[in-house]
Figure 1: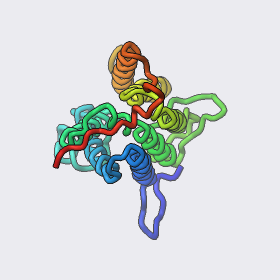
Figure 2: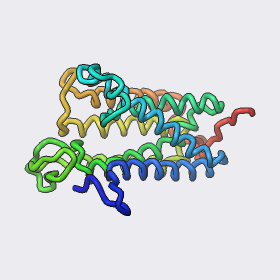
Figure 3: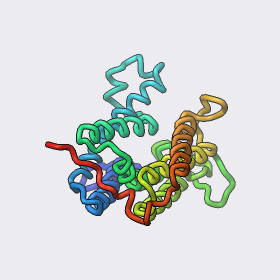
Length: 265
């Protein structure tokens, strides 16, 4: 484990490094897709910046809400200092900020959601590499499986052999990103994002069974409840598309690449 590296004499957190690389990779994928569909390429990093801002705000607010007994003692410090980020809060905050940006631009539609889905999956996969390298406590429960590993030098150390769940998530979300990218021109508008919701939610729902988070509802963790909502939304969306003519793009065209209507300026 390597929670911190030395860069020209300056300490650099490996989690933060991979977090940044994840956003850059997502921006690169989004840039290429925007170019393919004839959209302004500079929208990519506008979207990434907006998603990052919303994600950080949302994840911080969710942490404060989830840890209110601790946070209420010093709300200013809880909001602006120290660590404490919750992934589902980041997902909600990022989504709301992106939707607000798209609404202001006049491009809030299914095609834009489809453009973002592969980038979201790839960015998440790379970010989880940071969790693995830093040993930040996102690993799983003890296991006797041959690939179980300890995190003795992690940010949250353990000498037990545990499930390396960040690796599981990196592989799963990397495969999902590849699949969504491969299907991008083969399905109807909305299908790519619906598949992202379904399988992205399923991945997190399953991995939570071998992580160390406490259950909050019906034996499920907070992340599983959030993931279940994602899965249901994705599944309902897919059923609606199937009843409306199937998932495949009409005539094999690039349906998901249909151009969002630019706002008049």
